[in-house]
Amino acid sequence: NAGVMQNPRHLVRRRGQEARLRCSPMKGHSHVYWYRQLPEEGLKFMVYLQKENIIDESGMPKERFSAEFPKEGPSILRIQQVVRGDSAAYFCASSPLGSHKGEKLFFGSGTQLSVL
Amino acid sequence: ELKVEQNPLFLSMQEGKNYTIYCNYSTTSDRLYWYRQDPGKSLESLFVLLSNGAVKQEGRLMASLDTKARLSTLHITAAVHDLSATYFCAVDDFIGDDKIIFGKGTRLHILP
Image 1 (cartoon, rainbow over the protein chains, first blue to last red):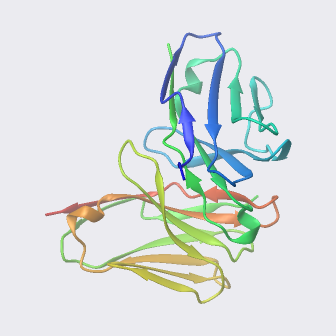
Image 2: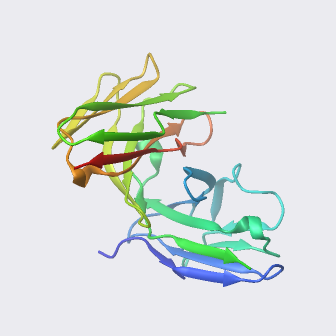
C-alpha cells in the first residue's frame, strides 16, 4: 500500500505564475488535509477536504488559493499569481475516516515551493 | 479558535537525561496526537491519545493526556542522540469541523 504521494517534490515558480500541488492519499483514505510549513515553524492548517467536498477552508487565504478533491484523481492545491511570501513547504495528509474518529494522519513528503 | 502551544520550543540536552515537553490547548478536545519530524523530512505519527488519562509508551518516549487541564506531556527518558528531531503535538478541533491544529513544535537536540 503506497503512502501519501505528493508531487512535485520541488516546484519553482516566478512571481505571477500559477502553482499546482498534487496529493494522492493512501488507498482507501477519503479525507485529505493540507498544511503549510515555513522554515523553523510549525504546520499551519490550510484546508480539510473529503471527496468532492470542502469541509473546512478557514486556514486558506481567501484570494489566489483554492483546493479540490475530486471523485477521481488526486487532491489539488492551486495557488494563482504566486508571490514570494508563498514560498514554503506544503504538506498533504490523509486519513481513512477523518479525525473525528480519532485517527492519525498519514503525511506525504511535501512539496517545496520556491517563488523567484 | 483552537490554539495549541508547546513549550519549550527549543531544547538542547545531554544524552542520558530525562525531560518533558508540554502541550497546552485552548478549547475542549479529547483527541491529541504527537508527531516527529526529522530535518527536511515528512511527519511521522508517534502517539494517538483519545481519552482523559490516556498514557502511551514507545521505547524512551511516553505521552499522556489530561483533558481537564487541556494538557499533554511527552516525556523522554534517558535520551539518546537518535531522538534528536522536532516534535509536534496536534489537537482535533471539535468545534471547528474536526480539523487538526498543530503546535509550533519543539526542536530537540540531544548532545552525545
